Image (tube, rainbow, N blue to C red; front, side, top):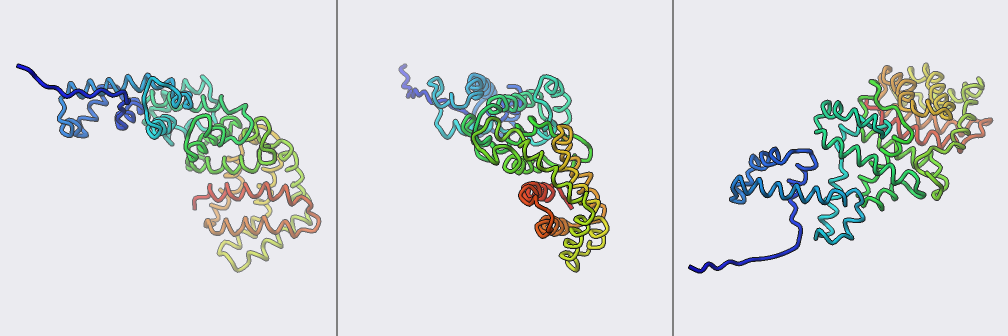
Length: 357
């Protein structure tokens, strides 16, 4: 008896995005099969359990073979082994470099070294992220850091060009690189309320305003290192608290502008000198590596916590810092307006982001 078969042969690589995500999340083949079965794929495709297992194993093999190309995404577009459409390539790359906010929050600001990698078991247990996924994410952070740390030019753009990531993901990686390079402290209990996106926003402000690249966009390490010349100039701001007449004048100008505009005025007036000393002292100490690391802790302890204990609203905070910054321009003997604006522009933006009333 003769049987007629229609056979179609193609060389397009078939990739199921759901299976890819299961592979990225560190599921074993058997666990992935269970998830697919629970999702109803067998009824959908009228497939047996054996076929589903075979399909999952086949896709896992494909992903493992693709993985070395994903380490250098530009190679994926130029290879001939896998016929993958440009759109699908972009999806594979973006998802491979995606990360869990809970995981990155645990490693943010830590050295991307073997020492930190040894802690991944504990981090995985704490965050609910599988060890395999933790390793992939950590290795991605390390890989991006190594590639871009010595490159000239804007950090975000370098990441986008070398790893073909979306603008949003490239900015998030820029924050991770920047925090790892400067070793900012993010793990203290007082900072636990802050999310990765809070820190990523602040990193963007620091990169765009306080790095060497904010002044000259074609120098080595431009967006990774803080501008040492600027940090040195910040010491000049101490006159605002060291000169008693200037401190009193600044307080008078700010309080005149605030009177009648907020219920927290009494507390603002009473605490003006302590709050001003807090912000100016943070500026003056940033030439020390340790004080750079403690930047966020200092903002919380010296400014955010006192304001929170006085029950300032976010609107109060915005009003106060706006007048505090602008009033310094009216002070006759204060000659450091450019440095002041460069400093306070970032401070205001970071505090607004970090102040959850």
